[in-house]
Amino acid sequence: MTIRTWIKTLACAAIVASATSAGAQETIRLRIASGHPPANTYVNLMQNFFVPEVTKRVAAKTKYKVEFVEGYGGAMVKVADTLEGVQSGIIDIGGFCFCFEPSNLPLHAFQVMLPFGTMDPETSLKVARAVYDKVPYMSKVFEDKFRQKLIALIADNGYNLGTNFEWNSVSDIKGQKIAGAGLNLKWLEFAGATPVQSSLPDAYTSMQTGVYNGWIMFPSAWVNFKLYEVGKHYTEIGFGAITWHGLTVNAARWNRLPKEVQDVILEVAKEYEAKTGSVNKENYPKQIGELKKHGVNVKAVPDKVKQDWANSLAKWPAEKAKELDAAGLPGSQVLDIALKAAEDNGHKWPLRYNLK
Image (cartoon, rainbow, N blue to C red):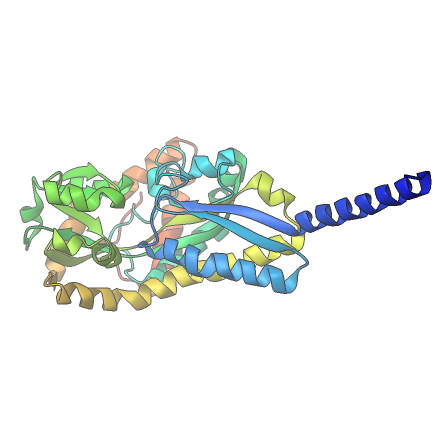
């Protein structure tokens, strides 16, 4: 081989290597996960709205291509490990309930501290947004302490009480083992029930084997996890639609993303947030109808029952506010904003909590 031929060969190899490298740089791979399965509405929307929309829009609007590696239902992270999974970089984007982080995110369950709030998930999002927009700590804590960025809030459907026994008054609940997640266990405790911490992946077997006899749960889960097979009673008590899930992205990974890709992700995340409200709202009556088709005894309790339950919790919001304030968190401020925001959006509390 002559020197000239050798130089040409090297030059061609360099061009090919450069093109391959450039091509590799055009593809961005992101790992997205949740401990919950797609049977959960918010995970279904991660899989069927957020991922395909980001993929499509990045390809259409930028010179980059995004490829997602998806892991739901605990394939990459468990329900209680998602915050840490995003923080450590095991996954890039995670969807999870703040209910599983009572020590790390004690204030982010603030709507749970005001039971019997709005049952409209779209209104719940508005209430939550009023708080997050007025209290910078609520978003900044993810960046300051957990090396991630909150890109969307996630609304749940309205919480009611599903059981394997019929009940008609608060006194019927006393002594019964009822499951919940995190802070909503207090709703049970004050009513005299025996609260049991659990998560949806365990619900069917636990109900079936008598670990507990009911769940504070929204109707979508009662349908999608087939809890109607082991719990034939679903009572519309109206604890409220709670916005206490979020979608976060690892901060280091976020900072390495091109600005135009960040913009697309934020655009889709905003729409995803809104959909968690609208889809849950749209599905609620359908899911109630499905439960009835499956032979579930679905009924609403009289206002007096709701009032009695609310009365049992009357002092709790003020206690929580003071406890959070004492820990250096803006507890009273957040609960006060949430109370007023709910009222500004047309909600009437069965009991107007006094935070003083």
